[in-house]
Length: 195
Image (cartoon, rainbow, N blue to C red; front, top):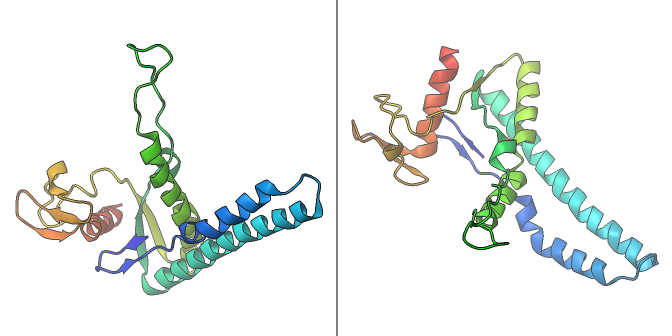
């Protein structure tokens, strides 16, 4: 959820995926109920209660984490990620060789990532962080995310090959090794201070 420039990592809570089994069971039960019946109304209320619980858990977690960060840091820089574009599904293009068929676009694989991004509630967390920081007199700066994860925090060498794996960063120029999120956080802090 959050990686700071001083190597502090805050893990996100995925309340939706944790409650997915119980929610699916409640929705399956709802599908079997007769329309306009009292049992259906009760089951609708149960499904709504589960959704409300997940929403409240996400909101509570975002409030607590944003308050913790505002209390610990006077200057906060964050990546200006376009969350709506990150969760958009790629459009399917027709297959020129087969009539009525489409080329694979990775939509099924992307659906799991989209669900995870929505479950983390980055936008809600950022809005809480910004208003709490402003009310506490802290400075908040948004930084362009371009090349922040590919730039070496030690020598400023930019290359897509620097990102070995999702979690590992190894500079091809100077050999600097670090956790990829920590390296990116240092780059974001430097860019935020420059602004």
